[in-house]
Length: 472
Image (cartoon, rainbow, N blue to C red; front, side, top):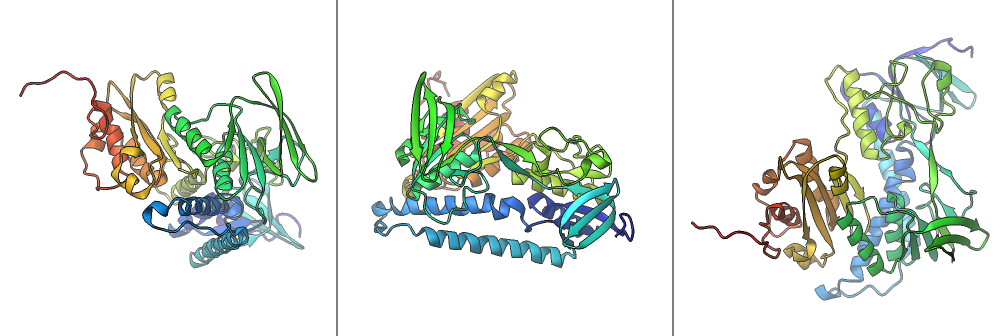
């Protein structure tokens, strides 16, 4: 076919069927736009097929398995049979297929045209899609780039060196695993593998990127779980062979070595843009392949937008999803706004972590005078009933305005509890806005209430603070 011949007209073309891409497609279709969604692999992208979903299947298994080992106090017999790794992998495959088919059915129901193939921009209003011997050309009014990114190894590629895309693709149980890093992937994998029977060593080159009280509690839980933790190390060499991986690191100016059957080590990321032909149409990308965009998510070509990981900003599916919806709504004529001031972050460790807003250090760096209060799960009735007493909630407020600046939780149900913090910060809540409502009793949510009440020294289940006696 001659390029430009028999071009098919489309309102909106989306390149990439991951979380950002398919959410944008469905929202645009809901609002009456004609949508073509181009994907060269499976719908759902890396998140569904290799990353978020497989990892959460494993972290969920680890959480439940760990609870079965600790349930004897409730009269439940302790599980004595070994963990069946092959059944976990079968369930993981089933979940992935079920969710992927759900996306396919939704696209079909919304009359979204799904095109399988490799996309490349031919001009600022045309895109070509090749699939085998077939090459189709679409002339679009608008386009969204949602192609994601991929890990780029800092060391040589080897089957015993795991990446975020292979970390949860193991068909057999790993005997020993060395993890280097403090990112989401590293911390979740450390806990899930340890609880499922792998001996894990966690090497930390830097401080955890968490509120200090949360980081301290996480490391305490890690050591309790049996994870060997080495802090303030300097990675020197990574040497994989057919049998094991040897890692050399420095600690306190001394050289150490550790061997394990597998290892997860630091890596770079690259935007998936090499084959898109962006240089042909003047869309700017940086040296790591990430698309440069405006605050409105617009590239240097005004009719082309970029969302999600391919922009190199926030490596979270939730961000891509929200950006996709915002662009779709704008193109449909709605007054939608992208705002990344408050992004909830969740770590499915054991116990899980969830944060929203500033840490105490970030607030102080921003020049705020702050008050910080922490309440523990240990003093929570429902946590005691559930045997989930590990954890705490730390809240931060501006001492002058009473504005809540951050909510940080580690403990059972943290991912669900953080939603109240997300809504509160978005609405500009003050600490009294969290104290006034009634909280169900008994519930984990009361930990948040206690933490906020503690800002005024009024938490019921904390030791009394010194205060002047008042007359009535």
